[in-house]
Length: 262
Image (cartoon, rainbow, N blue to C red; front, side, top):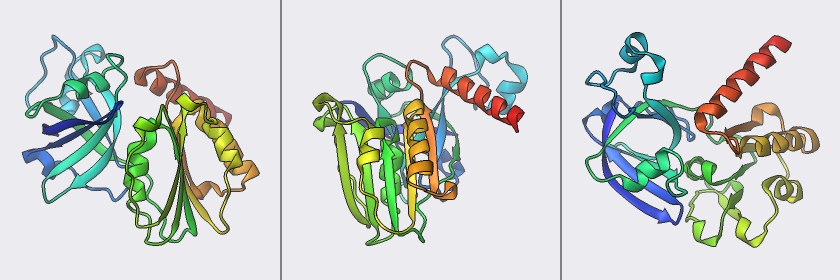
């Protein structure tokens, strides 16, 4: 689908919020998940694509090296009345593709999307909710906190660069956030999680961020904390030192290796 940028603004020094809408908003079908994600398409410079852009046609008729580059982002907010979606982008200067695009975005710019996908929403039956992640998981954590049932405890451990990166996050639940500032030498997420107090009862946990860090926390939650697999949404969003293309190739290779072992 093709939307148009309506607003782009920096909400913290390293987070840019882009609001987009348009006639094709009706093609966005809300899947009910709070971690709903889209694939943003970035056409390659110098390549001519069919108009309107149809990825089925592109994949069938164009060489793979000419396909648009994709980047995966969580929908931070959805406003059916205004026919708008909001996406937050982590920005670290000119590095990468999506961050610089968001920094330069102007009203009227095209935003090409595929999706949404998703698999998680806070369980209404859980006794309490746990959210753990870094900047890359902040949009999904924020969207999910808004869906925690009223009064139900929600605890969040969020790793960011500095106090300036903190955001106002709201929830109907009984929310308590621990911000971990790298600039102040705060414990890494696995250490903070290991030291965190767990409330009694069944927890529904959402744990996302850097892949190797997430893998360490998965072992802790399943092993030492005894969290049931079905009560745990956990996945790496990125891997240190890898682009998204390289990271997705790593994940595909890991899945293939796991399948061969079964």
